[in-house]
Image (cartoon, rainbow, N blue to C red; front, side, top):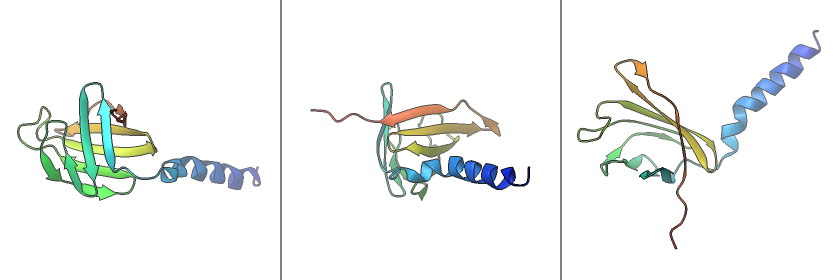
Length: 108
């Protein structure tokens, strides 16, 4: 049993490290007809507002501005891999559903 504990620890560590293998969260993201763009701490929200947020290479957080459909919500994103991220909105201390967004396809 003692030999199994370090192995399980390495498996858990590897599973938690998966998002770090992705490139970065910057770029254009789409879900159905909605999209947003991240470039460093700058974001153009799905409602077209240019604001800044808390940026790290694999995560982004911002407070949804007035005029947005979800105004006042904490919006948190986490990169899952190079082409997919999870987005969740928290309003009044209540977490909304997790949405899975994909990189927008190039328009030709």
